[in-house]
Length: 129
Image 1: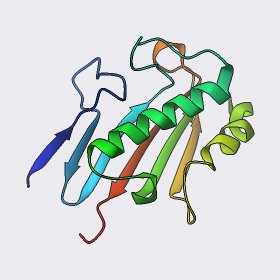
Image 2: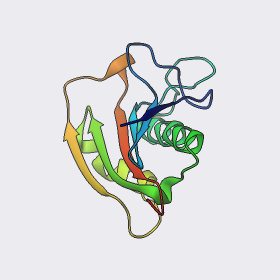
Image 3: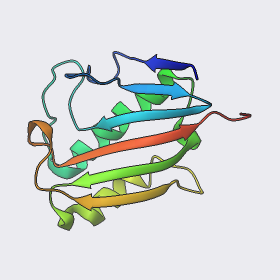
C-alpha cells in the first residue's frame, strides 16, 4: 500500500511524530485540528465559536492539500472539553458540511493540547475511487 503525506502552511504544523494528513487507498485521514492560528501557533480568541471555526478552517486546509473538500468527508470525530458547548459547536459545524453531513462521533474529554476547547479530525474519500 502506498501512502502519501499531506502538508500545508494553511494549518498548524505537526508538533510531534504525526502528519497533518495521510492519503492511502483513496482515503484521506486528517489529524485532529484545534483552533490554532497557523501563523502564530496560538489559540484564537473568542471562545468555542472562534476555536471551532479556526479548527474547521485548519481541517479544510489539510483537505485542500489533498485536492479534497468538506464534501468529500465521510466521518468526523469531535472532542470537546465542555459538553455544554455541543449546541454552539453544531451551529458552526453545520455551516461547513453540505448535505448529507458526514457521520460523526462527539466526546467530552478532560483536556486538549494547548488548552483548546475543541478538536476535530476527519476521514475523507477521493471521489471515483
